[in-house]
Amino acid sequence: MGPVSGSRLGRFIQERGTNQLLILGFLVIVIIGTLLLRLPIASAGPEPLGWMEALFTSTSAVTVTGLTVVSTAGEISRFGQWVILGLMQVGGAGFVAFSVLAFSLIGRRVSLQERFMVQQTLGRHEMSGVVGLTQYVLAVTIGLESLGAAGLYLRWRGSMPDGQALYYAIFHAISAYCNAGFDLFAASEAGPYFGYGRDPITLGISGALVIVGGLGVTVLYDLWRARFHHELSLHTRLTLLMTLLLTVVGVLVVNLDPNLHRAVGLDASQAEAYVAGAFTAVSARTAGLTVLPLNLLEQSTQLILMVWMFIGAAPASMAGGVSTSTLAVIMVVVLATARGDDQPVAYGRAIPHETLTKAVAVMTVSSVLVATVTLALVRLHSGDIFPVAFEVVSAFSNTGYSLGLTGQLGFLGRLLIALTMFWGRLGPLTVVVALAERAQPNLVHYPEEPIILG
Image (cartoon, rainbow, N blue to C red; front, side, top):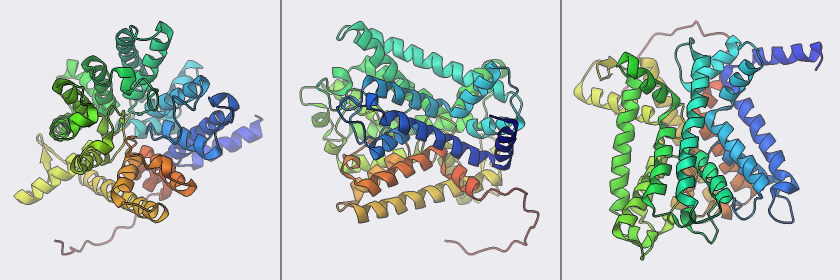
């Protein structure tokens, strides 16, 4: 690239806002993944994947969703599976983190604009230590995925060749930690998790990876720093509280489903059914690894799973959804309003007005998006509205749970689901801010006037 074109690229980057660069970056990764999956070598059959199939699969992998229109195990070759694995890793750990690490390795100084991108992606408020945090994120990601892969390998090596067990262990450890939901057992004769769909050790390792991946890098970093400072941030406290609450309630609801034992298998013991039910509840919060047919559960349980998917996990994590912190802020505000308090307070800390405004914006935009896409798909695909809404929420929250509708959708339906996955991964607030980003701040302020509510 010559100096003229290089300067043009530099000006283009400087003119773009941080959120716009994030969107463009993810879009470029999706396009690269689509082109790679379109190669004949990426298909397990005689014909390459179609453009829509490749685009949908690439988007699902980059957004760590897991919804598929082709079988990853049966219709995609080993090369294609490695492409999906790479897309999951980049989409999960974040292309910004990989970019900063690459810059540091080649000796290039990380610019202020790139530091802002890392700050936005990782949810950091301070500019100091951003590069160190990014390197920490990558180290923790690779370390936890390696531990998970080692555990799964040791558990699976007795039922398959060592090479196959190692490959499957690596793939599913990354898929679980990144909350991606891709698997290599669906539509295969092996059954859920290669026959380990009721195994407490296998599901325990995978479930732990899902939970840790959904906590968010800022929470993990805060927990690590707490060894020295002995104090957790308000964000970390609320995230841990909401994660515990949603996990416990979700496990109880799923295990109280009268159809659970039949869904797991009548030959399963009661303990095995409980383990599979607990993993299903944990995986519902944006991981989407499926070990039992969800369509056999009662619709009330499916509704709870759909709500849990919509909530998702923590921001700046491998997961999607409106985030646990958004729900926590709204709950704190509702409680403060009910008590008549002047300001919402949690753990002795007041919630800033800006945080409340963002929480309301995220919840509103997300609800409108899900409702709009659901209505559009109902028009395109005749049938009950509940399975459609379930699929849309799964796409928006980057979960990947499905009642079997996605594979039945036509071109426009799949395109809508792909766009919903893309929006959900970036976050509704990121997209809204990017589309309305100002080059200069608005210095005009208007007088306030109350509006009657309720």
